[in-house]
Image (cartoon, rainbow, N blue to C red; front, side):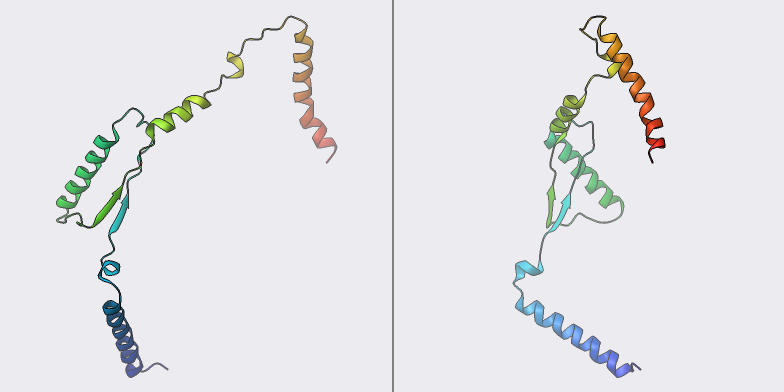
Length: 131
């Protein structure tokens, strides 16, 4: 059974350890800056990263002010901009659809294409038989 004196002792130990650590830790460790990471979404390619960050910071400050608060002065903000790189990856991945591909072969390929289509239809049927 836990008594009131045991709880008081535990609380006292907790506070004394916190006080001891506060005197031992360097001031920089006690005042660790807060960190915030802004991550933009898609469709930002071609944008100016400095302008985007400024807009986001202004919006953050407006939101804080609207709630009666201020943004902490020791806030470190990271805003990695990858919009142009992401757009390039999307552009590179835009492979043509099979319906957009035009064959350069002659009529002799028709037999092979029909064979491929027949095989594609038969594979699921064959799998059911061999399970």
